[in-house]
Amino acid sequence: MPDRQQRAPWTWLLAGAILAVHASAWAAVVFEAQSPYHHILVIDDRGRRVLSFDGTQETRMSLQDPLQGHFGYTELFHYAWLWNTNLSRVLMLGLGGGSSQRSFLHRYPQVRVQSVEIDPIVVQVATNFFQVRISDRHRVQVEDGRVFLRRTRETYDLILLDAYVKHRYGSQIPQHLATREFFELARDRLSTNGVLAYNVITVSRLGGRDAAPALARTLLSVFPQVYTFQAQDSLNAVLIATRSARRLSNAELVQRGIQLATSGLNAPPGLWQRVGSYRTSPPAGTQQALVLTDDFAPVESLDRRSR
Amino acid sequence: MQTAMAMVLAFTGGFVVMVLEMVGMRLLARDFGSSFYVWTSQIGIVLVALTLGYLLGGLVADRTHRPRWLGVGLVLAAAFTGGIPKFSASVTHYLVSRHAADQEIPLLWQKLDPALGAMLVFLPPCLILAMLPPCLIRWAASRVEHVGRISGFIYGAGSLGSIAGVFVSGYILIDVLPLPAIFRGTALVMVGMAAVCLGWNPEPQRRLSATNA
Image (cartoon, rainbow over all chains, first blue to last red; front, side, top):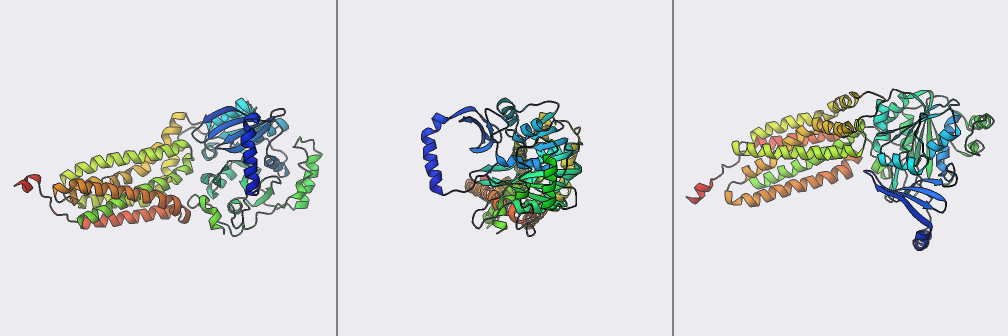
């Protein structure tokens, strides 16, 4: 769930006015439903299919090539390979329009994906409109992510979390998916070299800060190492937490990227070449941030708290 | 004076019920997640507790003119509430883990489990708190001609307390206090309410026949 960079208000006004005039000519609503969680729209807009929850773009997909047109940040999840070159069992909490599911299943034949999605209508939308296939390699369960983790006996090589809720009043993490206890559940379901990848939205509003440091700090209370990959085209960042205690330097990560690039792994183009461009240290302010726990996770007020 | 005291009790009771409902949601989310059914259950079960409490409270009000009984009930409810952070996990764990792992929980239980959890953890204290208003009306109305006005005051104070409870817990408590502290604080408030009930000796009510005579 991406967050675009802030622009001057007048550009938005202008863009809004132009959109209002032309929207009917460009965009067609293909599907609309009110689920218990969201007002869901599927819109076709100039060759691109968009999934919108409550007016916020959740997923984008090219109609010509479903493996294109996605939000850039979703590619950051693929950096999990840097820590585990034998990924095969992948758990994805949150389905949405299934960008990551499509990409992982298409690119890596050795990978099996278990998706967990809380909203049954989203599962229908993903399969009917976003080319998400349910198969032996891709199982989908309708359940809350935490409930699933608590009950499953499987172990996974990668757990991927994309459960941020973003709307016009700001972005918000589901509190029960952001606490130390939740990350302990996740760690216990990871294999020895297992990796957890967590999408967060970093907000650079003047004076305000965001949940990323608190999440990084909370992850660090459970996992020995946390790496940050800040998206270049949006405010999203993917935090990667590893069970491996050794900190890899950026030079080592670049080295591993080079090895992966020649390994025949069909990762998104250019991914390994960009490894060196990230500052992977935890977000600024992580040391001072609050560890979120089941007992105390004021996710709604993190902005104010970290000021 | 009696009316004022009854209104304070009604306000506090309404406040506490809503704190339990709102903050309780966070507790339920640990094991049941935050699916729509969890909110549905919590709201529904608190309303069940209120309904039963009003019914029972009405019966009690007609039978005894001694707030002492309700004071004892409130002490028990306070002890229960103070213990919620300790025992709620075992209740919700039990409910979740009776389903086979690695299998989707049947839809019926996805809906009913959170309701059962809410029932076992939040129904008892809310029920006792809901017994207050009918009793308060009876105790505060020393003259039958004033029953209308006094029940209006009690309803109003109770609802105002509920409103305050919703906003104070949603906007403030959850942001500044850990959940166990909120439950313990709520229990303390209930002990205070119990003390008021235990020490209250309402004026005997004059009967309609007596006023006519």
